[in-house]
Length: 101
Image (cartoon, rainbow, N blue to C red; front, side, top):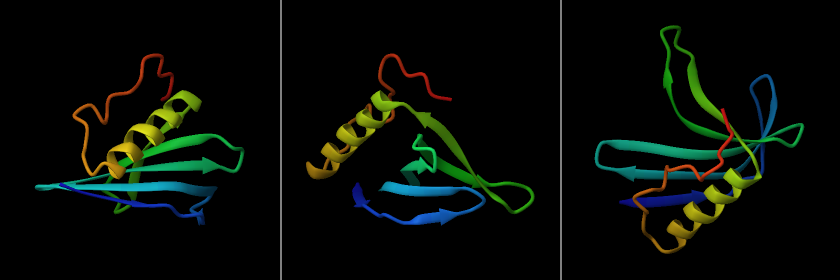
């Protein structure tokens, strides 16, 4: 399993101004997955989960509102896994009290 982390600070213009804070891509056998922590212009954080191409040829993504607890969970758990070069089995488990969408 290979884990790559890219910290970027750029604006993405797709109708809304978003700032990509952390991009993490995890590659495994026949599995491509990623987590992107986005910051909206109003300061809200969202987790962008892997998406899909819809029937109209548009790429859609799952957006999950990330409150402070969730943002910190992903930041600490995933970045810790990256630093230790390992993936935890529960990396996608959300913390208790998750109130995102």
